[in-house]
Image (tube, rainbow over all chains, first blue to last red; front, top):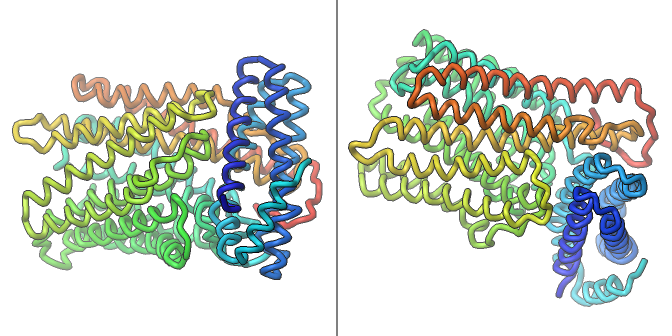
Length: 146
Length: 432
């Protein structure tokens, strides 16, 4: 499995647990919603950490560009984290309408972000990084925990 | 901010660029409804200028406007294509396109040479100004995603539609004898409907259906081959027309309709497998749209056989319009609330309205019922003339509603900018 596949699979796994949390909120099952939302936020934050601590530095070191795509991705991570905070608040308040509205924004924001990573950043990493660096980065990413 | 090819922070163009195209689309939709009210059943007769006026109000005024708006928004995201001066480009396109469409409508009505010349010049500039930079940037991409590959063919399809249109308007203007007029007419509407509209929707679907609804991806073989296959089929169809080869014409047309139906069935299937089970109005708009595409392909497929009632053809085109307009509305209800929130949030406004505060899902659902009723009334009018008035009124209300919601979102956006509390973001943000 290469970097691109591994990270793309993580995106899909986050989508699944996100959809489960959304459905639980829509059903008014707040217990399930809380659990699924917690899983979603943990999975997403761990994925971001893998990128920010391992993948992006590897890309930056190899390309010498710290102001490029990785900076954009970090900025978008901050936007997503902001929304996670607001969604957590909606779960805590059991505010269905607020949660579903935030979920809509989150989904589009996250999918646009994922699309850019999958189609551009990961593809660039696969193309530009030497095989040994790719292997090492992937192993390090897998070891990252929250 | 950086200019590296591929990714950039302010990916999104200014919100006003997208909104102005949507506003124009809604305005022409209202105009189309008024025309339908005035023209009565004349608009079901393909030989009448009223029909041409009505068709072009929808295809150019509504569909092309909204599709240009969507392309300005989507190309940076799906293809990393960024326009240097999007506001200026959008202004040039609109300043020529709106008078160009109106001139064309007057030309059809008066049949006066001068108006055909004016319409050709204005629309020629508008479409070229919008599409050539898009195509140039798309062709320079080294790596294509699900949508960008097909978008190239769609834009070439639009330019081919324009070339064929210019041949026809040149004939009206008396520049040439128009010996191949009928051939170019068929090429014009086949490229326009299938080479541009269907190809663009199909390419965008590959990205947005999965993105908005978290569905399984389209089968890879279909995703990779369908855009080129569709485009090549239309080229063969055009070749068949020039070569006067009936078998080639029939074969390519049949393949065209089958591809549209297959795309629509695959999309319906993807939607049924979506991971986000909540069926909001936009899912219903997609379902209505793609189901209409299947019906349209089936009706147009049988319409050419001898002895078939002409109403099959008309119903085929009504369902085609339903296909496109339903998907336009599905995109509208996602894009407008999202962009309003996204731009304000990115500018650091703590009071940025959430998507549901821009347009509530219940409003979208009511619009879905209204829109469905307008489609049903239009189809029903083929059997009962009086229903045409109802369809016209429903269309006016539907597009009036769209105009109002668009205006309200813009007002909310400006109001938040003027009065909202702002948190200065450490990084550059998209501008208004």
